[in-house]
Length: 194
Image 1 (cartoon, rainbow, N blue to C red):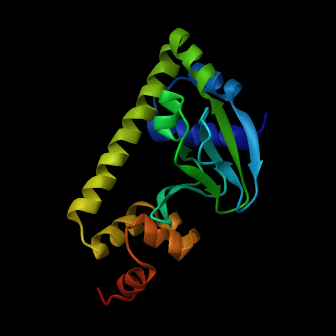
Image 2: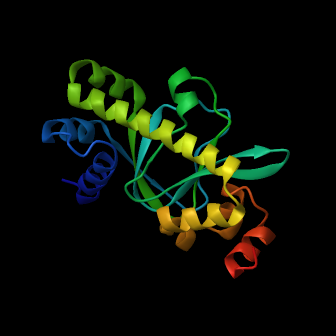
């Protein structure tokens, strides 16, 4: 058994549905396809239809898009995280989001069509899928509220507290765009000027 696979499934499942039984976890493991990637590689390109939910086993990736010619980071994922382009996945339409590797790494890809078949026969897998969707919805709402109600300093401090791996590992330009700041504003926040 691939130890990284087992560790990745354990981390991903525990982050969404910690009470999932062993049988459900093994069903998920059996569906996963390993994909190694290199820093800078695009795991999903704009215009492609998303067909997978990815569990990150090793390395860091980001979801991003272009707006008015600028690169905007939407989300960071690293060991134990789940990443997906939810609208493309659910509608089976081309995405505007891209997924890019920020480090060399490994993802375990969960084919959406196979997951949907398993949700019909396994209550545990169905609950896990539901928890993934609930978590994604909550995360989106929290991020939107942060943009609306928090200052630049509060957004940075919240990221520092909730996702210190991002602060340690992601390029500052991507962190700035994720926090909806210019790199200069992020530098001032980090220096304590703002």
